[in-house]
Image (tube, rainbow, N blue to C red; front, side, top):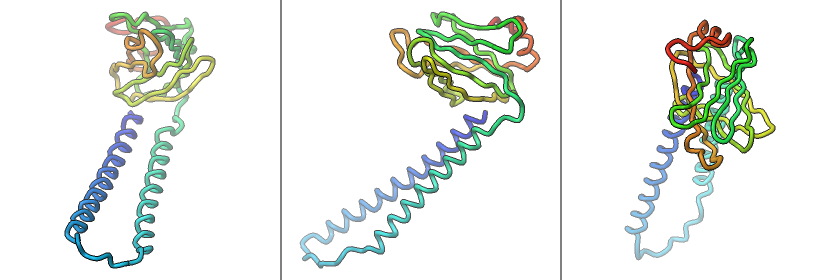
Length: 215
């Protein structure tokens, strides 16, 4: 999945840079403390500041900052490249305290919802290997659609539609949840997202149950 791959690449690189900078600063701090301890009791030399060294320090920090901003922007661009084929559309509505998934391209106006109590979790069905545009809104308060394993997250606001496109490159099922505290049963506001073969997805849009289980 593009989102998970991009997130993993950016997180690994930025974590490595942060760790390297932390170790360098820690080493320099230790060196300064040991040198000061060794020089205790010696008179102050009156040595002026070192503008060249300070400029070098600022230059290195600036280079790191520019690289991180440019790298992150480039990866964000890769993540949001327009799809090569027209995406299918799913309307997602968050409400206290569950989800509704509607399929406007379905000739039978297919929709899936649940109570989010016990095992009654709704399933967001998508076709594997095809881009899917999610149009996300909320019925009452702010919610947030989050699929931890796939690194997808988007807030849902009342009277507003947020849109993002995802592509799941293989079949499978993953658990999603609400990531924005939205009231008493926020903790139970989970759902499933299931990627199925495109032909099975087309049959699903026409009202047929999924193979092996109903959505």
